[in-house]
Image (cartoon, rainbow, N blue to C red; front, side):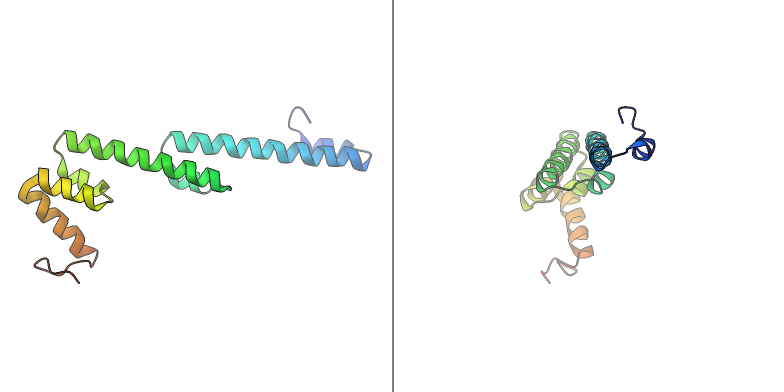
Length: 129
């Protein structure tokens, strides 16, 4: 069991309690692996893969917090460099769009308008749908 050879351990188990011990050990090992991979994919920003590994509400919450932190970090990076086009790709709130429009000038306004039109939120000319 200690070497992770659960199939062999199961074959050697002679009593129900020994078989149960093997089953428990394998389940614990699999859970440990899942958590390790979840931490890895979260830390490396591989959020789609990490989403496949979350099973508890706490893990979902932690992953969402990590994703939001990553988004904000990159949004701020682009804003500091006056790269409003890339900042706009990361904007998710009205306040963020407002900041981009304010600091990005006319180009920022036009870019936001195109995104809102593509999303079907405003018609040509800026009229809400």
